[in-house]
Image 1 (cartoon, rainbow over the protein chains, first blue to last red):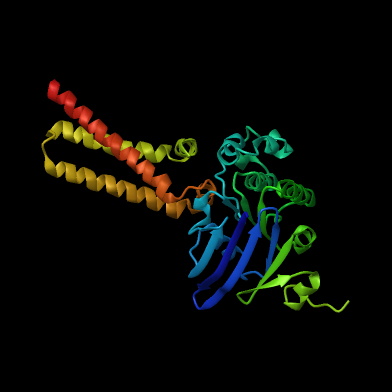
Image 2: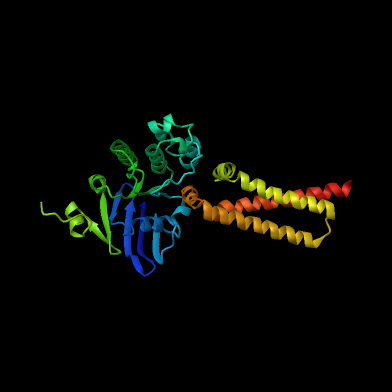
Length: 219
Length: 107
């Protein structure tokens, strides 16, 4: 069974407990949506899985193996909130670096095909973000962590990212955080809300209101 | 993995490589002038090479911190990226030193 599972995550910033005994599971073929207020610990949780921060406590298993840092396993990639690829890198080099198994499928994407010989820094902000997201979605890793992938993108680009995630879904597991909650509600297999350092299972938009993520309007 | 490292080094470490190589060549010149039997010079060379590596590491960590996700997403950590880079530089320095010593010995 292919599965990424993290539990007992504890992390503090100063005196504030950001994550307390948090648990998250994502199997291949699943989209797990993570909601939470600003500063609620969503990015911290993804970074703890990825291994770029070391929480005070965590227990991470990937495909049954205990792993210290997700990125060292080569099975996890992470799309941070801001651009992470140096602006002078050409798209063709990036495709060669990140994508082997699904390269043919990635090269069918218009934004990649049309800008193959361009430097990534020469693309528009939206296209740059889209290319970075596509590189992660089509990478060789089995688990893809997407930290606010829809921010700064036009509705058309958001739909393009969603379509690509769904296309790769049979092969991969996705963990997505974003404040565009309606998109995640539409296509996530499971959803989790981080609130007061703990995680809550979410089924409907009413649950998001109940736990204070959305304003509790009566109509 | 070697292809990934090759792309990383050729795209991001050209200047650092030239600076570290320059340091090696400077010391090579000193060895050529003073002779290869001076133990103190070897100690100074080692100290300067180590300082060069520390400066490289600090520059990468402090000024190019955002690049860490670029490396991590390739399954590479700083230890691997910089460790192999420093090893290549140090071996190159040693090889140049030996080559120069051999040349001066036979001239």
